[in-house]
Structure formats: structure tokens, C-alpha cells
Length: 351
Image 1 (cartoon, rainbow, N blue to C red):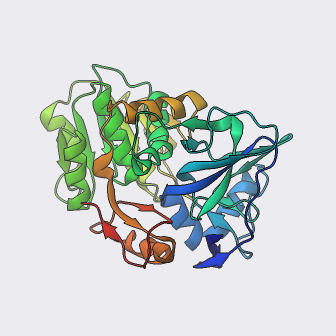
Image 2: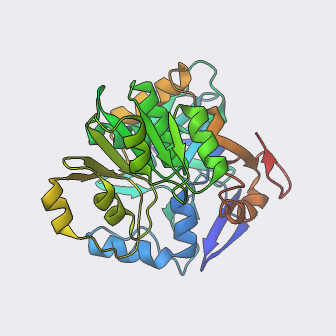
């Protein structure tokens, strides 16, 4: 069984013994797995992930100096259920699942583990109780977007934004674009989006943003003032680099709400007095609830949200290392899906 293995900042394809599902588990053939920004970051700065786990008192999921496996945005075809296992899915079904494997009282993350195979593999083991059947003949690639789109839904829910509010999205990576998808579906407007990349700004407009701006040419908040400037404003920080939270606070109008969903793994600094004087509300968001994950799959399958424009390329296991490099160029790829059935190292363009 072939899988992509990471170690000390490098990726390679390795052979592992065949997987066998235990009681309460499901064996699937991976049909699609998205490459996430957190995967790119962990490969380059895995030590910061470990340090963050220590800081919040979480059990370490992996040792970056040993072989570990990634891939948590997956859709698979069920091959077999473990002994005496009941599940909502059966052999032949397509399934998606939240990226966790429950073993007794222990919950282990799929996608950042030295022990558990992730989605960059021919096959993987899922928790039977977390599997959802993919409905309506939905394409496996689009189904594998359930996980990152659920992150966007959770962030929008956490923000408390509602009709009558305006939205300002800083950053057009996959998560920033997923915010646009959900904000548009909620009937929020105007939606102002900011990013340095022309290609990603174009995708934001295609997905429903009312105004897209290059921050080198116009401050995002000035664009909001130009077209509205009256409605209560919710600012979504989806960049995740040092200085962005402080910038959002400095530019936001009084009584604005700021939702931070960009994952900055480095120390950062803000000026609390700015938040005090402006009476800003700030929240942070990560992951999603189980019902939000299920709601996302339903919305994709029913065509309630348009996610196809997010996918820009597909690649086989042998091309994952090259895809990681390509994703470092914002004018190149946006969301690359790994399809283990593909051969070769080249990324196959989707759009």
C-alpha cells in the first residue's frame, strides 16, 4: 500500500503493509484528498506545531523528526468494515469523515500522525461512527472539499454575522475563499475581499465577492467605506501571518467585529488600547462542529453552494511533493486534490 511520508521537511512515497480495519473501523480506498495550507506549514515548520501542542497542553500528535503522514481533507470508497461494525456506510459507498480516529478513550487526529495513515495514500482507516455517506452521486473531488468548507462555515457561524451586516475578508487562500462562499449563501452584502494575488481576487469575485481589492492600491476598509461605510462590519482575518491581526484592529471602524481564522503559528503583537478605544469584539475560530461538517456535505451535494471553482489541479501520489512547491505560488495553484489513481508527477489542471 503506497502512501506519502513526511520527515524533516521532505516528502517521499513509501510502501506500507496492507491495512486491516478493527472493530468500529472502516477501510476505504482514497479517491481524493485536498492539500491544506496547514500541511504546507507543518512540512516547513513542523517544530512550531509541536511547540503549539505543548503550549495549549495538548498531547503531541507526531514527532516531526520521524516519519509522519498527512492528509485530512479526504473522500474514500468503502472497501470493508471491521468485525461486528455498524456504520452509515457500506462497501462501495463514497464517504467523508471528520479527521479523527477514536480508540477507547483516546482520540487521535488523522493527518498529522506517526501512526495513522492520512489521506495522501491509496487506502486509509476511518472511524465507522464518523463516516457520512456521500449523497446524490457527488463527485469524490468535490466531496473532499467538505472539510475545508466546514472550517469556513464554522468561522462564519462564530462571527455572528447576519443579514444587514457587511463583511470584509482579508486573504483569498482556500479558507478565505470558503468564507466568501458561505457569506454569499447567507445573503450577506456587501462582501469586500482583499488579496495581493490577481488570480485569487478573480476567484473571489467568481464566488460572489462584491468588491475585490489589491491592498497595495487601496486599503480594504477604504473600499468598504467607498461602497457602504454604514452597515455594521465584520472583518475576517484569513491570512495568518504576523501583523495581520494588528492591522485589522487598526483599520477597523469602532464597534467592528473581528473573526480570526488565519492560522499564524508565530508569536505576534497587538496594541490592546486600539481595541479598547474602538470597543472592538474579537473572536477566533478553528475546525468545526459535527453538525457543521454534515451541513457542509449536504450543501455541496444539493448545489446550495458552488465550490467547483476552488479546485485548480489534481495530482497523483508521486506528484505530491511537487504540488507542495507549486502551492507556494499564489498565481499558480489554489486547491490541489490528490488522486491516488493518477500516475506521474505533473499536476493536471482543472481550470
